[in-house]
Length: 120
Image (cartoon, rainbow, N blue to C red; front, side, top):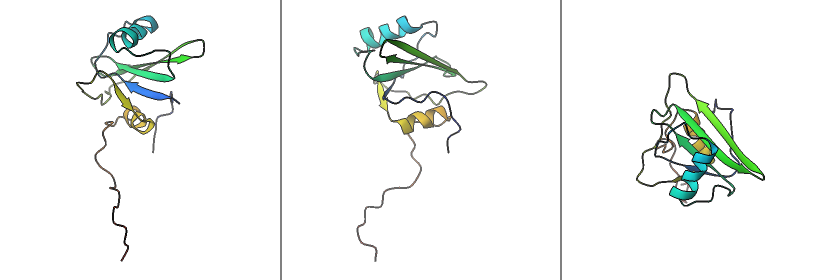
């Protein structure tokens, strides 16, 4: 069950593991997406950024005529922000919900798929 009721992307979700300077706003973040990551900031996708302390997230997404900038600041907590050598991590909506609920995006627990095809 999810307690998170904030921003819910309905497109591709790209997480940027490297922390960014949170003084950056739309122009600075789109510059990172375009110039450093070599991606199109105007594609149907949202891009997630965090600060060094991982207690804040900025999400930028292109709408048909401008950018949305969502901002979340935690009080006394930190996001379980992944570390990666990759500059961009595509994540699912499920992983997004895990992250926004304080969980790691790489859940290792849970039920395994049953591969046997015979009941008895």
